[in-house]
Amino acid sequence: MKIKYSILTILFLQSLSVFVKAQATTNIRLKSATDDHEFVLSKEKGKFVALHFLLKTECPYCIRHTQEYFSKAKTLKNVVQVFIKPDTELEIRAWSGKLTTEDLKNFPIYRDPDAQLAKQLNIPDGYKFHNQIVHFPATVLIGPDGKEVYRYVGKNNSDRLSFNQLEQKVNEISRK
Image 1: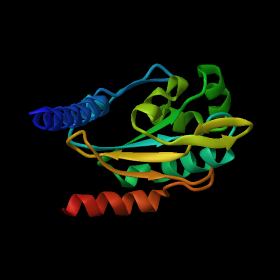
Image 2: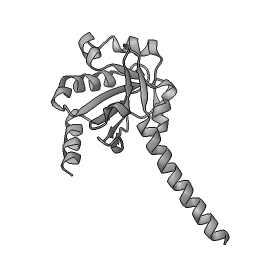
Image 3: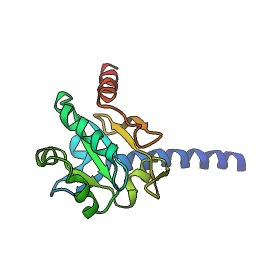
């Protein structure tokens, strides 16, 4: 009898963890550090959403990564590009000063205070960058139904999912 209850308890906890993860993904809300925009995942149903987790502090690779996406994003009309940094609002504003006003108007930089969303989505941390321990750079692709369909976690600050790789992955998933 104890074995039956233990198995039932394990199954219940596993299903609860899947439910909590699904809820966590659908309830994503982020405030922009560069303007008054707010990103709400539930408002983007029917589209793919690419969550780009950028590194903390000064990161020249993050600037190049965002600029590549900014220049090509219009070619992937069914994908909302969301750029996320764990820095303070002031640090993000200083960092984003290297981006054009037009780019920031089209692609605000969102703030993930204390990397809460990165932790919630299990983006691994432990990466040493500028004498800090940070989460690895990553892109999480959310499908039109609001569920995660793909993730890419870089091994270092220059290891990022290129725009062409994202485009290929979206096209591949769309054909299924």
